[in-house]
Image (tube, rainbow, N blue to C red):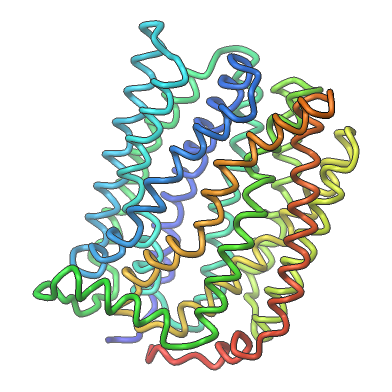
Length: 413
């Protein structure tokens, strides 16, 4: 495969994903506030998040195979465009007054089915477009786009909810799809083309993808430990909103989430500008350990300032961990197999989120009921326990030599 850079075109593609991330964040924030105000249950909020995540998880491996067989830009356009169907359905239900938890869950699920095409396809497309030396910088930029839904969206959504309702947020999200599709289409003729295996059966494609991620012991360890860690980190993602909404308004929640997520922006800019050069395995373990300690501080006290301080530190460390995971994976998998590999990696490593989304809300409600405390404090206790377990898991990860050996890389880029 020709080894040439399309970094400017990558920035165009990234811009579309940045806008899409903001739109998705508006809907996610708005629906979370809406469900909590409607039911007062952390479990109901977690259910919506779970149904929005499950299709992406379960269909990820299939999407990865498709990304290695067909035009990756077209798949992204289909995924982005068709995911609007679920949002239109939710909007229609709200305008007709039939906007119960069931209808919202249905719309979120439909949207997530089509969104499942995006993650492995986007990551494989970035590998197509860039050289190995640009992977780390690109990872930093991708972290910035990912942080937009936590940094920009909550602030905008919190302010808009003071003058309107969740329907406006959903409409804005739907409108962002058009710009995203234009950006994807603009880079279609500029990417580096990998050899496709169109005559290969789906089963063989799955086998090749599984082989690609299990050839090295370090990759297996990384995936297993990542799955455990996503379970603990999923707790803070799903419980931060009921924790704060239990004693503050949606406006304060939006401001707090923006302040916390600004940590991700700061570190993503640093990584995007200079990139990480070495010691990826050590940085991964250290950053995840600090994330766990910050989760303990995050839930320690019902004080919005304390929450913002530890939240900022938590999000500051996340891009370092994500960048290291991204880099170690890219340099150890053949580019022609990256789509199916990313699909399988996403499926396996994010299984922990399923447990977090399924049980964190229920556990928080149960602790609150048993201890005769508010749902917010129940959520805080779950977050602190998860943080302690995350820090312990990160320390264990640092002891694996096979993970450190991944830094040598052998994907023939």
